[in-house]
Length: 260
Picture: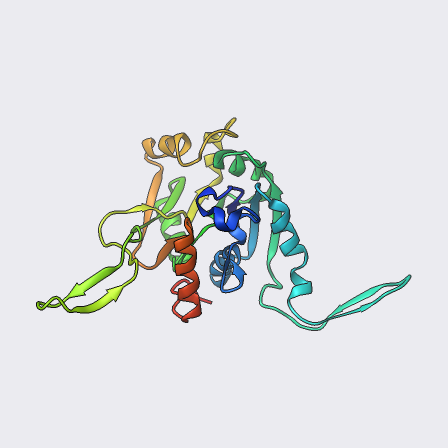
């Protein structure tokens, strides 16, 4: 079962980082956030990836083209019969990555429609964004999706708080401080979709259509959209402050999405 990741947006709200690279390549702990997302799926046994490229997609291509070279020591013989020997192994050697050019200005509906040919005979696929991390139980969500047999499942998450949360004692002393926690009320779309290939019936001529708008509204109005509730950690990287927060969690050894 393949994992489709939307990697083509321009990330304008994170311009400090995305002026020179695509948003999925913005690092957490020295690795692109895209790598963290892929590691989440791989930890559940899903290692076939289709990346929908757009803005500065060549940087993502170069990253995976050079992955083996950057993973460890390399010996080279130069000359008329050049040879390369890679001395070290890495945990991603069984990954399959398809780098699909889906257009720099294409909306999410069009990006999904354009990778249809890479799904082969699969009848369902994972779909997510390249700019958010979470401790989502992919295996449990897949079981949920197959049980209800609808066309589309999204992961419903609690939105992250905008401000630090204080726990105060009666004398106004601060007993606890939680920086930008998950709120307990309300749900939003956290991505981490599972889709039947029948959703392509809703994606005709959609280059300028956001999948999250008319196509998803139609799927929902037909009773074919279900929500998998995720109570654990989830956080986007939409702003520079969120970039700093996710990196701080990683550096402190307190990254809840690290399940591998």
